[in-house]
Image (cartoon, rainbow, N blue to C red; front, side, top):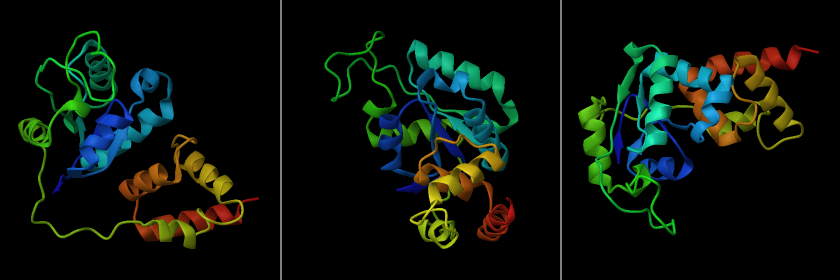
Length: 197
């Protein structure tokens, strides 16, 4: 597994699963065209881009191009890098038939091809870097944001306060929080939320 400084955005969960097996980096999903109608998700991607840089890694088909172009216009280009899959004819194993363009997407590429695409995009590989001690699920539990009474309500309130999508799972929220703040900043914010009526 290789560590990359930048966050990565892909179209769907299968793309994310393929990358998560080989890359240690925050990976966000647009859920296809849902990104066009979700300002909080777009705000999260902007924040990730400003904090670490963002690699747009969409499929080589028409839908991937539309999403890529939307993100190009919505996020400052100084924070963006673009990874491209090669145009390989085929279909993913889970699909009964190939897509309209007949090309493999991110999920259908082998690990070496994905790493090569990230290298060509200019990803910052940190193979020798020490692992950062980021936020953990235990941190969320200690702050009452997971595994306790009203923790789902507390997570929604925290997401709303930060302008994040309210429908984030606890794992997705943890990833976003780890990207955006330190353990101390989270504890301070959670404490302030507890004091609000």
